[in-house]
Length: 548
Ligand code: C2E
Ligand code: MG
Ligand code: MG
Image (cartoon, rainbow, N blue to C red; front, side):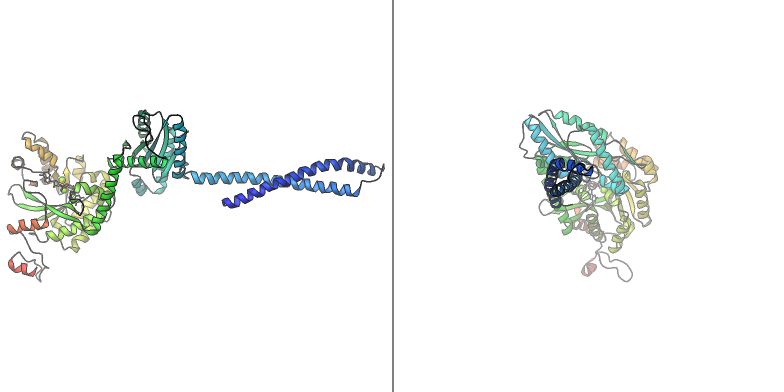
């Protein structure tokens, strides 16, 4: 029923009050006419007088009809009003509440916050707006389906309700985002801190739905209309408060999730910068601004180059040359890492085809890419498209991959190895992989993280690297040491056994032209030409350069 229709019906119902009035008047008339007509009727029946005046009898009958009509209209009217009340209640609920959790929705939360602020400020109180977001809810949905996802949200709402005072507005703002507003005495922010600590305990306890156990954490952002010293701020309305809490919550996500932050003005500019960075990365992927740099990998015994590790760089028109530690995590988060990595690998395969075929190429692969069930197929397609032999390629995965889905990682590694691609465990020692994981996962190589190698600088601090080297030889996995910065470190490593190594001692990561120049000097550059009829590639010489 539309609002217009409802109003029309209500108007009609109101008009029918007139009908009830007429019926009431009819009753009065009935009493008056009945008083003179009925005794005459009785007397005429018992033969004690003449009958009543016809006109009066008609008037009385008309009165009776009017009374019946009025009463029926009145009954109809009452039931119409009850129905309308019910319909109004449903419409109000639909407009104000989230149907899944029965919490308020975003629109009504804004109004409820404004109302709470009006009342609280009138009594000299501050209002804190608290925004709560479930970490990794997308994964819960993807892995268990939306049915389980919905049950998790309902459970979350119930847990929040239990922890919070019952008379404060609690809302589900959309997806896995909840919020509540609460008043407190200005300056007493520790009261809110305590409440939030309670929420972390209650909400993050494991959730069990139909035998599926879900461990989830939350990130929280808080904004207040008063500052920490209890001074009223410049927050204009509930909407601004909500926006500030959202920024603080985002800040908590960016700083590792499972934590909370109070809003601070500088967070807004950080967020703006971050948004610009995201847009820049997206544009950069479209425009091919990401380029491979290469770091030499050396046989520490002979000092010869045995291969290169490809390290991504972003040639940003605005920011200059940007390091991967800045853009890789963002590319992972905004979902462009796969596309970026494939572009980089294609370029790297083309570059490496110009090198001596003995030289290997290592590429870093993000845990996000390993989650893609088609990753192995994609990689093999790239190899074929670029005519690059699988046995020259080494994939580097970090230990964090092993926490994700060990079964999937194992089958991925196996299928890559079956195609001839080597797989190494990067940054070993920083990610807590267990000995049993190492024993059962068929890695070809372990790379010792540079933080341990750096320790060798101090000479006597060799125990960890020593232990990793023995572990490698026990598991029959060759070792590469990262971060060799000087001769002193090199000397210690050489005494430990037969290792590969890389680091600033041999040179910084450099672009493909410099690598080509370095290899040319060593006579290890092949100019890439299409294979001749014998299937051989031409070796670098003035002759072949002319063909190129
Ligand atoms: P990584 O794979 O451990 O790469 C080695 C990092 O150590 C490189 O940093 C390299 O420049 C730096 N390094 C090399 N020798 C030395 C040294 O002697 N001393 C010191 N202090 N550092 C040294 P970079 O290029 O900034 O890369 C950082 C990380 O970014 C890499 O660590 C890798 O995990 C990641 N990364 C780089 N390229 C890619 C990529 O294409 N895809 C993915 N998913 N990750 C990448
Ligand atoms: Mg690496
Ligand atoms: Mg590394």
